[in-house]
Amino acid sequence: MYMNGQMIFDDNHFMDHMVSEVPIQVYCGRMHSDVGFIEYYGKEFVKVNNIFYSRKQFTFVSRPGY
Image 1 (tube, rainbow, N blue to C red):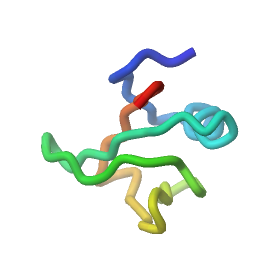
Image 2 (cartoon, helix red, strand yellow; image 1 turned 120 degrees about the vertical axis):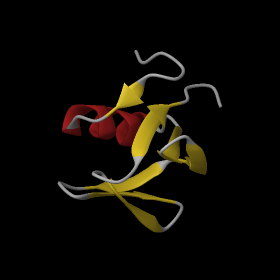
Image 3 (cartoon, rainbow, N blue to C red; image 1 turned 120 degrees about the horizontal axis):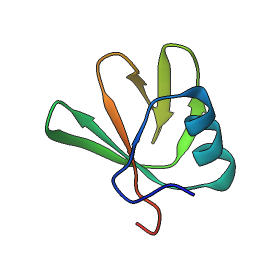
Image 4 (cartoon, rainbow, N blue to C red; image 1 turned 180 degrees about the vertical axis):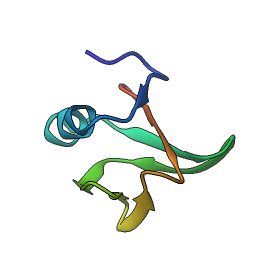
């Protein structure tokens, strides 16, 4: 189980969120960029709301119950 606000960064984290349909929030620095469900993830990118976000540039935060 993930806590609200917990950073996710590992492949297992992304897989858990995608399979369980737990929403995530996407940040660029401290600025909120997006919120939604993971549609795809790979080594370099995470796809949310039909947008690919670089795993190196953006921060991903778990938002269960959002």
